[in-house]
Length: 172
Image 1: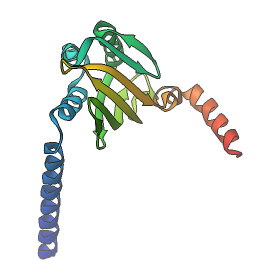
Image 2: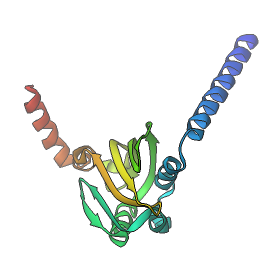
Image 3: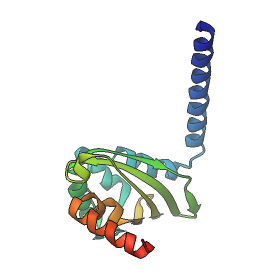
Image 4: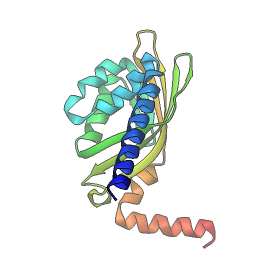
């Protein structure tokens, strides 16, 4: 019994070390701009919105399914409003696609906020397209995600209506 437990412990240790090295290696393969993008979204919170000024150009354009924001101050206001009620947020990223100064980043957001889904975790998948200006800051940012999955389906009354509509569209 002790030998089996020891083998399992050794296997798990090796497994986690190999996976950690693999993930660290993947991070090392990122270009400085790819790292800048991931670092920005991983660190952004209501308490450090000054990161927005360092990431976006003054005249940047940000568009997502919730609205359009022109200029860094408008973008900062948008993030401020979004993040003020966030209890927890994290992102998982897939490999970025790069074409010159344009970066396409698939992601999965995990979010907890008391105002949606009864405070339970919400998972939303999306894709961001970011274009860097010559000054190294983002001049254009467009997010694509299902706003229903993010907001509407997290409100009990709307969830029931949307579920009903989806079932009807599926022919059930």
